[in-house]
Amino acid sequence: MPLPIRISPSILSADFGKLAEEVGAIGSADYVHVDVMDGHFVPNLTIGPLVVEAVKRATKLPLDVHLMIEDADRWVAAYAKAGADIIGVHVEGNPHIHRTLGQIKELGKKASVVLNPGTPVEAIEWVLGDVSQVLVMSVNPGFGGQRFIGTTLPKIAQLRRMISERGLAVEIEVDGGIKLDNIDAVVRAGANVLVSGSGIFGTGNYANTIAEMRRRGEAARG
Image (cartoon, rainbow, N blue to C red; front, side, top):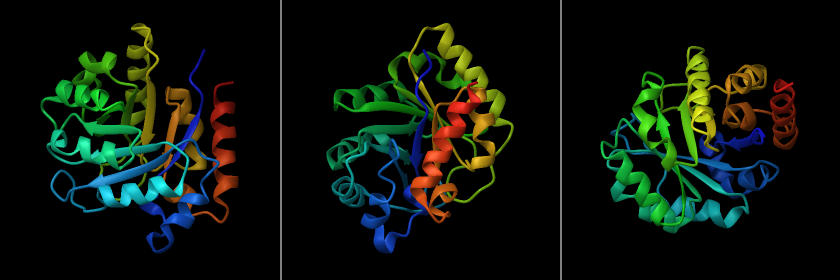
């Protein structure tokens, strides 16, 4: 049975001047996607554990925290304590990825491994059994509002085949340039978790957009 379509709005595109209100307005979603950037692994700085704590207080949804940082081992405990439910770490910035994923699970959180657009699926082949989710970046990480990179579609399909061949129930999340007009292609490739920032927060009615994204995702499965 296929995994359900899940919508994970990225608060990177929210109005941080009224963040609690913005988070409350996406209550019909499945996750809240929180992008953490350190200014080293990616050329941008965003938020830390204190903001994650504030987001946790503002919602009952699971927090899907994406650590775009180097040496994530040093920080996973802080984000787990702050309220992260899923913690995603990049294979590119964390050379001891098996240990890092194990640390996340020991903290009682779901582990997610993340791939940049130019990183091959084979880089995570031997940790697929250690994660609940794989996050495929469909833009180069660091900034919101970028255009979807179409060459990630065959990569998603390759990853879905690899997961299916192993009989694993691993979600495939896709982040970057996700809009209403490309959801069908992303889902047909094999993704089931859709991260969208400006594609949701740039619209007039967040709840309607989330519902339509979910509808289109389900329809794409035929």
